Length: 416
Image 1: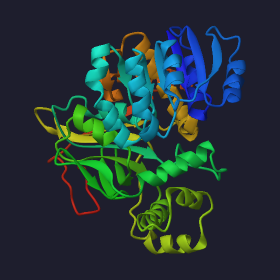
Image 2 (image 1 turned 90 degrees about the vertical axis):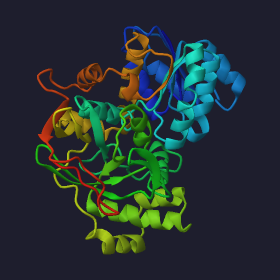
Image 3 (image 1 turned 135 degrees about the vertical axis):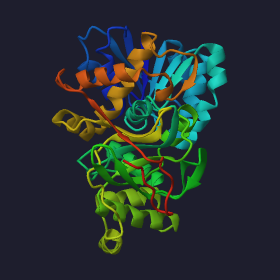
């Protein structure tokens, strides 16, 4: 299949292109980017591979140029953000040109808008997979794994690491406009205002950074903090939690306290997302001191794994608590540390399943609705270099006397 990689010269797009160039079912890759020089550099890097890679300058704000680029492709990988601006626009163009579609969208609002294009995609035979990165993406497939065997899902959480250990969200000081800077600005958006969660089985809005205390199988106990990724939006549709669902960050109490200070100042208009992102790289003394006053009230991550999904529910005969997590090895730590690879490689593995027909069903789908999770994790383990003797995902179960419910305003608990 002919692949168009929109934004393919960026860090995450380039990681996806490098991985896609190794797929035997890919016949041609076009690295399409507004920065033609960067696209050409990547094409030169990959010259000599079995799959031809060429560069193309495309400005996706130009509808004619976008449609022309899509007409020459069978499938498009969209890594151009912000997705609230470009996600639905590119997907609509893909539907119009009958081009299959994958992206790494981690915003709730455009995720909802793109899911609403399901019927239009279905009518034209287009398969679109939205949120096929790390979180969402890997996290959704961990949630699918955690709920396997449950006839009734009560509570469901996905979680990704910030600084426990060094991980996908660890951002070094960066120049304005860089990848790290863009990620930090986006992060500030997701820890301020309100976020979407599931309460009593329905979508609800609430402030972010609520501590969720978990008591999980395998003596995994600790607190993680709510953040505005779209997993609750898609899981409410696909996995039907009847209680609570949320996306969480696994962070140290000090980081939680500092983010709380930034959230307060963003919500009060004292900081913008951009100036708050600058505080991540170069925190001011005043905000450090303010965070110290909140540090002791922030519960610890304890023994929680860095990247996991946890669920409670009923198997039909008994209540059960389940955790599915990325096994903690040197390989997974290196994978999580590299933001570009941890997002781009899952996108390429989703592409692999779409191309060979494993995950090619017309309509707009989140990963957990269409991707073969067992194959995905096998392929991911091989791609990051894990020994075949090791399993990438560990699943642990425990009986649960009663399914979990929401506790006090800032905490909830899963039985373990």
